[in-house]
Image (cartoon, rainbow, N blue to C red; front, side, top):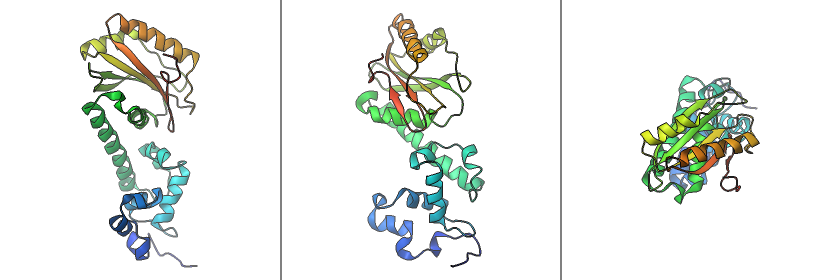
Length: 231
C-alpha cells in the first residue's frame, strides 16, 4: 500500500482522474458530487487523497444536499477541513442562496415552485433553532424580501401576527409566503402549524395581503401546506 507523506493534491492524481481536466474536457455534468467537491478542496491530508476526503464528506452529511446545508460549525469537526476550506464551502452555499434570490426577484415566484422550496431550504434548513420567516411579494408575485421575523427554541417559536402585518404594510407587499424550519428533521406540519397559518391568513386578509403558502423546511425537505390542501 502506498504511504502518503503529506496532503495529496489533485495534481498527484492520474491525469484521467483529475476532476478539473475531466470538467474542462467533458463538462460539469460528467463529474460526480465528490469530484465537484474535490475541486473546491484541492488537497487531501496524510493518508487520504482529495477524492477520498470529498467522498467521506458527502457520506458524512448524507449526500450533497446535506453538505450544502451544513454550517461552518457543522464542518469544524471534520479532519482535513481547515478554516480556508470551510470558508470556501460556506461561500459556495452563500452564492447559491444569492443566485436563487436573484431568480426569484426577476420573475413571478410560482413560475418555479421548486426554486422557492430550494431557496427556503438553503436559507433555513441548516439552522439548529426554530426560525419563522416571511417572503414578502409584490403585486406580480416577485420577491421583495425574505425576513426572519421570529426565533425560538428547538421545540417552539412565538409568532406575533401584528408584527407580520406591520412588516407587510411597511414593504407594500401584496402577498406573502410563510416559512419555518423543523430542526427535528420532520417536514410534516403540526396542528399548531395549521392553527398559526389560519391565524396569520385571517390577520393579513384584513389589510388585503394574501397568504400564498406556508413551507415547513428541514435540511432535506420543504413541505408545502398549500399542496397538502391545508391553506
